[in-house]
Image 1 (cartoon, helix red, strand yellow):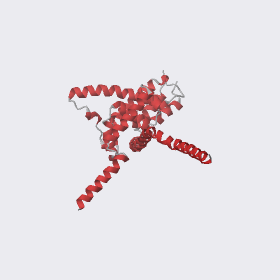
Image 2 (cartoon, one colour; image 1 turned 90 degrees about the vertical axis):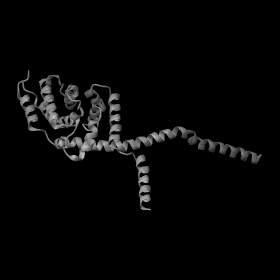
Image 3 (cartoon, rainbow over the protein chains, first blue to last red; image 1 turned 180 degrees about the vertical axis):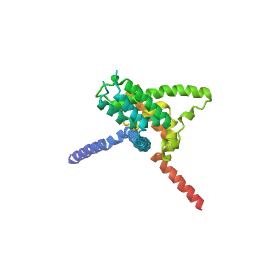
Image 4 (cartoon, helix red, strand yellow; image 1 turned 45 degrees about the vertical axis):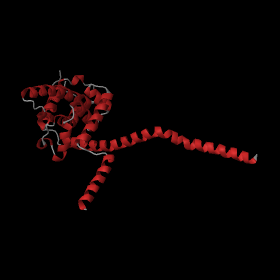
Length: 84
Length: 183
């Protein structure tokens, strides 16, 4: 009776253990695509980061070229005119 | 009544970025400066339609973008009718647009469809939110997001930027080939 109780307890514990170890396994098929897409997203971000860097470097190069005087003069001249 | 100096300063402050947007779109500085000039003329002629306190850069970029689109459509028709060399208008010239180190990137950028190129520049370089970019291009936010994603994917292909997944096997293959060469 004592043994049976022990067996029951072990069986019970084992069941609990199985339930615990089963849980991540049963989630695995669902977890795997999520992990893969996360990995792909991470790799995608690295590529996107490099494209972003090049794009901003090019753009900032244009910004830093400065504005031709005739364009800023145009704004000042038109701003000083009487508006309708 | 003269223009509020605060508004004028907002316009002036936007010009460098507006011009960078124009160069990025047309890949030619002379055309870009014409586009900026036309934009500023229109903007200041219709400054009453700008609501003070709202986004001045977004307002100016919208005008420039619409001018570019109508000019682009017109030009493409003309050039294609003339000699079919429409790519010529988008071809970038290093001596005109800046340093040679961006040549490869600019060439790839010029190969993108116009709607993808403008979306990518607005969000990725000009620093506009997806909402602002959508307002500038007159389309839905979701459309801007998908255009930006397609632009990035296409650029990655054109520039042959390998993902880390591709890099590993490639490096292993090169190592094997190098080893085979030695033996």
